[in-house]
Length: 497
Image (cartoon, rainbow, N blue to C red; front, side, top):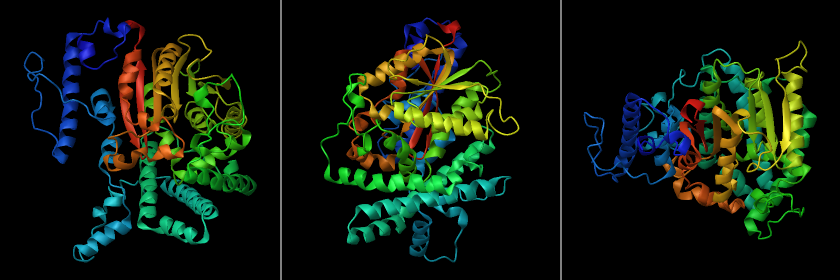
């Protein structure tokens, strides 16, 4: 009963756990402390009445009720240990240095200019941005060049879609204060990514290696060609609100929800052309920060696996798509065996090629032996019916899947994750931010549904912690990464079952 009241895993296997009373009291106090985060946020908007619950000497709650969570973000604050990134992205306002300077001029000029007060680049210090640290020049040079490429590609894609007059407006948008604010957001994401790297939570991106194929002009031109052919089609379908969202392949092998032209991309998930353009399209959409957002998935995973012998460990990347993130998992945990699971054979082929290229650069295929690799394999199957034995994986990562699912399918997948995971194992879920994560974006958070995302509005209002607790998981930690959120969950160890 106490575990249930504390919001711990609600499954019957955990309710029967023999947990010391002192631990329960500490957990109750920790949960109560988190209510102050909700109260403080509401107080800023004048929606809190000031009556906080209190803990008595016996550990009981003196007031009758806790604040009632109204958004997924408020549910998260009660369920998860929140990293510093959560508060930062919740309070940081999307703006650019141009906005900062304009505000300074309105307030009386630049005579009292203080770089530390640049809200768009806050915290605006050399130390906060890691500019004086070893490797910073290499990191920032690479990411500024890479993001600049995707900004230029975005401009070209828009230009090919619009009429001549509209094209001028498009370029104006990319160079306006709005466009500069979006780019500044990407810079903030790189700052956070670099900070995690310097803390030793994960390696610097292996694709910074100049031998990586993304530095090959022929590879760049081929990917750009595919994007510039696909972008006008996608944007045109979105503009007219195309109603026929079926795909070319009719098959009983795939669930109905899967046979959709997600994002209005040609063929949905079911062609090699789609698989070949996906990475470029999504990185262009996010102005080159998608990899950095996804790498935040490694933060809770690194903490969970720290100090463990991974020679017999198995990590599954659920709905791996092109497998690009799976290569970052492999690069950080090379001794572990990595399985990429996806329903599309076309995307699995792309994932296989990405892993093969990683192996050529960093694994056993690299000159000099490379990292000792524990192997990788690929599995075609739906995430709600994984053909592997019970308790066979040590960790599961899942990136950008849940916002595309119906509530019923989400529930099935969470239950399947619980079955496949070993006791004590971890699931790390990374997906779009939800209502309350970044309040300034809440008003237009449903706009993504216009890109043929029929389940997105439901997703952004779903209590994910509650969904996983219902299956038996314990909520662990939360991080925010620009327009993505990262939640981790633990399957109770055998002692608690």
